[in-house]
Length: 490
Image (cartoon, rainbow, N blue to C red; front, top):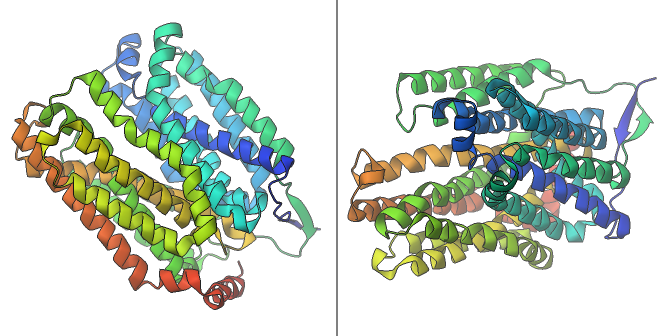
């Protein structure tokens, strides 16, 4: 007899539910921490392994590539085999890989460990969001999403400073070994308090789409490499990788259209609400990446700040993001996802527009003021958008949809780093930005944030034009979405 998993009903915020949220929060924190904690250590690692910068940068790139290429497939696999068991497996894999990285005697073993760590992180990122609907009552979904957004911001923001402390006191191996006890704690909490993978009899069961997963991974890997290789220069290698990504995309679409149990059902993208949410998520992530790409050059090259002050000013955004995440979730629960999505986008437009016109003569306070408007807007949007996407997803598709949501964000970050960096370089009209005059850096910064403002305006147009506002506000349309899912076998 073949059996299939069903979901335990969501619970209110009881003590077990709080511990379940704690396990999800810790999973999100660890996976986000893994993204940023190794960056500061690259010079130390280059010296420790007598390696070039091009070699040690794969310590960071491999982790990001693993997450980007595997996150949708891992989410779908969780839908099939059970999300709790796969999340726990992902956390344990992340933990073991952290240990391997911490004791690695060679650079290439460290890079291999980071790839495995990225696989575990892909499961952690995809399945934490998918679990929210099973952990808290629907009227508290926004708060849970806001909490996960806060933990993601804390992980990303604290990575560099934590790495600096650990390296100075214990050496570079500590930045990886610190994940071992935290990973064991997260795995224990997840296994003990997350809803179990219940099973019931069924004549047939979905199979994992291995060919679709392979083609999607090749597509995403080619695209990510095209956007990140070349040290800011777009050459023949980048063009070839983009062509490979386009060909792989076409093959993926053909395979999914004929597959009996596709990795991503084509019908998902016929839902204008979901498609619009994913597009908006990508655009917004690209804008957020602009602050990390352009901010340091503007603060040092145009305002003349020293390295320590630049770091302090750059920490303002992540700190505000961490402080406003839960509050943003409460706003979603109180006023609804529809209004909060638009409010967040409008705030982001205001912040980006301010950064595109504020003169350098106003100093770092003006820059921080713009960031203080942009960042809460991002948290409002993220909490509302995540809530809207996951609100009516069928139980056996939550993993893959959550994976798509995380994927759209990652692709936005990767694309934003490349495209916005190119806009900044072109607008500043200089080959080497590090030696550009202050006026050129200011000009490039204004142009880049003007482009960012345009992206958010496009996101608002997408929201309105696709019927997202109507879809989020009318229960009849949400019901139609659920009926469509059932017709497609979801």
